[in-house]
Length: 87
Image (tube, rainbow, N blue to C red; front, side):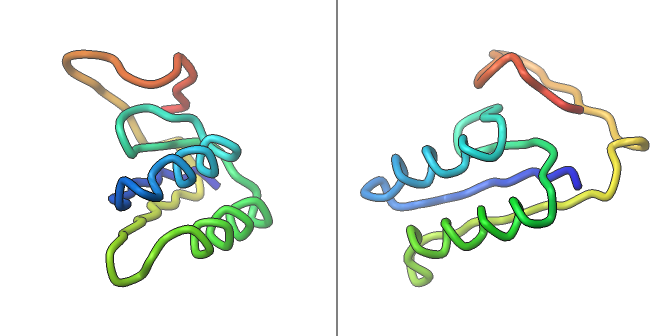
């Protein structure tokens, strides 16, 4: 599955969230990641993030797609993150 993840995490925990997300996905912009994940790695990522975030302060959103066949990625302005982009 293809995943886009965005988060808004307290600065006390942002480094841990960043490190965890980068283990599974490609960083494309501040607090935004994307990439292909197996179902098991998707579950591992969610589990690891639940151990980092505080539900009363932080937010993580996952957008999942079965395929990138009908999708397109377009960006404007300053390019951030790595050079590895899937869309």
